[in-house]
Every structure is written in C-alpha cells, then in structure tokens.
Image (spheres, rainbow, N blue to C red):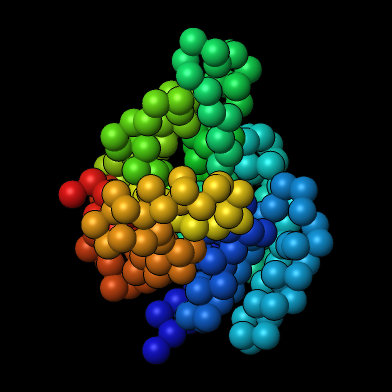
Length: 248
C-alpha cells in the first residue's frame, strides 16, 4: 500500500543522510519529491535518477533554505514544476559544536540561521499554497538534544528546541485550515556523519540506548511517512521521539 500516492513533498537537505532516507521512502510510497541540496550536485543528481525508477516525479534544486528569498523562489519553482505542495519536511541542518566558553558568535548565529530560521523561511514560503489547498503536513526535524540539551552543543540545542516551539505555534495557527505541523526528534542515527566517529564512541552510544542500537535513516523516514500521510490526520502540534528509548 502506497501511503503517499499522488502527494508532492518538499524535503530540504536531502542529498545524503536522513534527508536521503526520507526522500527514498517517500518515493517508495508514491510521493512526487522535490528536494534541495547545498553543494553536492553529483550526489543530488544520482539520487534524482535513482528515485525516478519508482515511477514518481523527482527533481533536485540547489537552494539555501536559510535565505528567505531563496526559500520563496524554491517554492515558486516547485509549484511551477509540480503544481501543488502537500508535504514540507524541514530537514536541513548543521552542527558547529564547542563548549560555550569557546564558542564564537559566528558559530552560534550560523547554526541558528541554518537550523531554525530555515524552518521559518520554508514554512512561510509554503503557507499560502497550503492555505489555498485547505490541507498540508509540515514535518520539522528537531533532535533529542533539543529536548534534553547536550554539553558542547548550546547552539544546536537552542536551534532544535526552537523548532519545537515554532512547530507547536504553527499547529495552533493553521489547524483550522487542515494544515498540520509536527516534529520528529531523532536520537543517535547512524549516517555518513556518524561513520567518522571511532568505534569505541559508537559502541558507548549504542550501550546507552534501550534498544541497544543506533537508528537508521529509514527509521526516521518511516516516522515521516506516518506524519505525512492520512494515517495521522488527527495529529498536530506533537513531537515524535524516534530515539530507541533514549529519553525513556
């Protein structure tokens, strides 16, 4: 059963990692996929070709969601190409970790801009279209760190906590027009980024998780499919923890 048949989704930051997993599972479930990338054009083109094999329309756009005008232009381009937008997944994000005493203002501002302001930019850009359609599902990627904090990540934790507050407010504002806004808070997800960590660190992470493993991009993607589909038609303003029980 294809849960997203005929729906069109925008996914930011989808050329690798969690974003790529979401784009792939969405396409498998019949969604037409517009996804963004920042610099890896080759990886984006490869993913575009790969997903088109599922018989859906897929297009990659080089776009910076942290830029207000770029976000507006992206939505205009996607509407021209796909004619509608049913789902927005705000996935683009960066880290610039350091202890507060060593963190520069630039590293704080940049993480807030890319992780949090991009969510404002993209939500603002799709809002008019979803209001006209009287439907839409907005899914924002937070983190376990946005819920419980983490030493050395004050900037990242602030950005991810901000996403939760923003999403709840959007749910209250747009719920009467059948537009839903929810959050996914991933735990330790094993991607290309975590592959750079040494084995001892990864094993330590896994040992502290009740399910005794790291998550996969597909674990996050499956949760996104649920929140994007009509299965979750009565769910909005919620944060779904996909973390193997880390916060239990």
